[in-house]
Length: 371
Ligand code: 5CA
Ligand code: ZN
Image 1 (cartoon, rainbow, N blue to C red):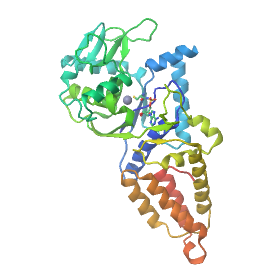
Image 2 (image 1 turned 90 degrees about the horizontal axis):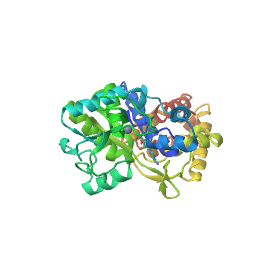
Image 3 (image 1 turned 45 degrees about the vertical axis):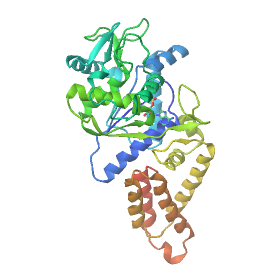
Image 4 (image 1 turned 90 degrees about the vertical axis):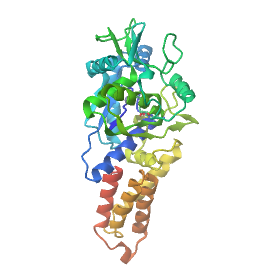
């Protein structure tokens, strides 16, 4: 599994956390099914927004990236999101990125424009098949999400940047195409290919990565290797909003995990996120944390009992909900029902002394909730 990582110019917000939680659940369910999971995640540790923010606050861009990556990892650990085998920063693999661009150039899939190297969309026979979007929609999204459809001299507006020639004051590295730095999509293609090869199971991220990021990355992989599909499944988590708009670093409508952690149990934060299905878009409100805290307290009281109602069916039912496209709201209800019976049980119904420990283990292993 390859999951697109953060661009580390600001702290982790609840939208990020929700996306990484979704893939943590994929990881946990695969492990529960007995699979070994090989999970890789990048960090976009050199990119326009990072350089702009560093400039704004008068900080070295490398230090800013390092600081935010560290905070991200601390936040993820607090939320009990299992780490990938490897976190790979783009700045660590510039040579691999350049090598991949070289392969694309050898296939005739690139062209140069004022020193920048572009991917020629005409060289991608399956372009559009990952997102299924119309060309009009692709053009709009490309302009909104870091692309440059209007740049004069491009062969096609949807052609995308692979290598950005050095601009004054910007960091750059040597390459066969001159000094410069990688474009966005190629970084994830290079890191996924180097660590997983093509044809891996899941490429993941939030739904804002469907186009252009995952679409373009898939065709870079296809054209470079001749193999298809690049990833067998593209899986996307819904967008978390605040005050009616998608939470985003550029809009600034953010609830930071680190800030929330100062006042709330991370397990309550995780439960609040689990209450939403991973594919839906939803809006954060403070009362969701209050409900999650109440649920956490109920569960903790129930598993602290000496005995409880038989829990073997709880395991079956939680697994059934989770293997049905990660139905976390359904899985939470299964444990709610057990906890309610445990707490109201008198005599016979609360007879199994092993039940509380089993429910504790189910919540821990499958949902990542430590009770
Ligand atoms: N570094 C690139 C991916 S290579 C990037 O998109 N970084 S990011 O920091 O902008 O986002 C990190 C992850 O969080 C991405 O998977 C993105 O889809 C997801 N994400 C960003 N905003 C939200 C949001 N409001 N709700 C849910 N997920 C989000
Ligand atoms: Zn990515």
